[in-house]
Each structure stands twice: as structure tokens, then as C-alpha cells.
Image (tube, rainbow, N blue to C red; front, top):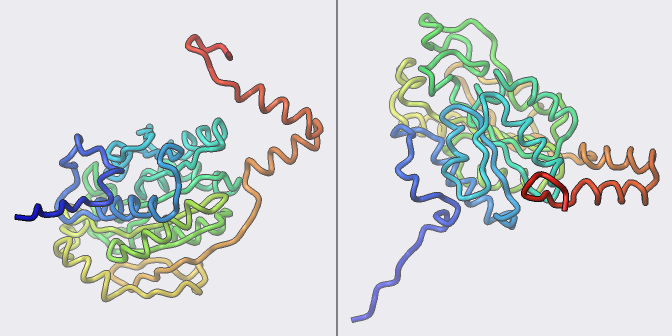
Length: 299
């Protein structure tokens, strides 16, 4: 009798399977984005040994611990400055920041804005579930007006950030938004953002059935995916000023920004070469990037 072929999931090679099962709730959209990210790594052709992932605190912040890559699980709101230092210390690395809307846009909001302004050569993936999910469902900077949270039992009246507009206005060279229903588009945009020189940003709207959906009586994770399918408008030509999200209103998705500007590292090196001269500057770089010995001394 012929031996049956063994089928292997192509994303398994990028996961730390010894840490499974994961902590995410049934119906949560974060796991779907991880699948998309794994496929994006294959699509963009980046060597996994030269790819580092940095996450902050929160449900999405646990992604770094599940990826079989060089991973950094950092302090709350500080994923972007960690990633910036990593990139500047080793420019050959592709550095990805993977975290949630609370970590990146609330406590980490200033770092987000200035990294985009400087056009630091990192890629930021933000899973937006409209609330602080890990700490109990409090209102976040992305919670739509009138949505209910533990800190707004009658519905919030605070105006949320429009993340694609925030990213573009601060200087991001690549900006896209999708929902966790749009798995092929998410994987494609992630790959394009990672292959882009400069600050790239991809927002993925995802369900949090345990807190946001339950408190707002929006159904299960599957119900939410059906809602995403029926209420998403794909229009990459839309001006990001007008893609803000209202409570239970249509969500505009697409690849909104794809431009080219010199990265922070390129601008810095050009400035220093002008100050010191190209030859002297290259000698200084070689000296600074010598490997570090076991006692912290350069070899």
C-alpha cells in the first residue's frame, strides 16, 4: 500500500511550536495576522536570520514570543525605540515592530510619531481591536465614539485617532489598512512594507470577542468577520484624512501611501560624510561596527 504524503503547514517553520497553544481567546484576530505575517516573510524573500521582531505589552505584544525569529518583548509603549536602536546598531537587519493599538498609539504614541517623522527604516504592524484587551477592555485612543468600554460604560465621547492619517501626516512612506478578514491583502501589504526602505505602517482591524464585541453586543469573532466582509470598502485612492472609523460604520481599507524618501540612516550618513569626508566617515563606521568581545571590549 502506498504511503500517504505528509502535508506540512508552510507557516510552521516561523513559529515556536513548543510554546503552543497560544494565549489568545477563541475568535481573536491576532492569530490570523500571525499567519499572514508568516506568509509575508516567504513572499518578500527576507532571510529569517536577518529579520528581528519587536513587540510591546498587550495581547498583540505576545506575538514576538511565538515567532521563531530574533525576538524582543519590550516594556510597555517602548517597542519602537527598542527597534530603532536595533536598526541603527545593525543596519543589515530588517526590523519589524508588531504590537497593538494601545501599546503603539497610547503610551507609545510619541515614539510612533517621531519614528515616522525621522523615517526610521523599520516596519510597524498594528493590530487594532479598539480597546485595551489584556487589561480588561478599557477605552483606547482608537475606540470609536459611542462604543462601550469598562472605562466608558455609557459609550465613549472621545474622538479616536485615524491611524492611516496619523502615520502619513507624520511622514510614513508606506501606509495600508485591512481587516483580519482580508488575509491575502494583509500578507501582501506586510510583504510590501517589509521590502520598503523607510518607515512602513500596516493597520489590521481585528475582533476582540471577549471584551470589545461582547460589551458592545456585536456577536462572536465569526460574526465580526462576516461584518468585516460586508462593511469594508476597498479604495486605495482615498485621502487618509477621510478614512476615520465610526462605531459600526463602513471601514475604508486599502494601500493608501507608497512613496520614496531617504531613510533616517541614509540622511544621517550623508550628513556625516559631508562633515567628515566620505573616506573618514567610512573608517569611523568600520571602527564602530567591530564585533564586541565577551567582556564588552571591541575585538
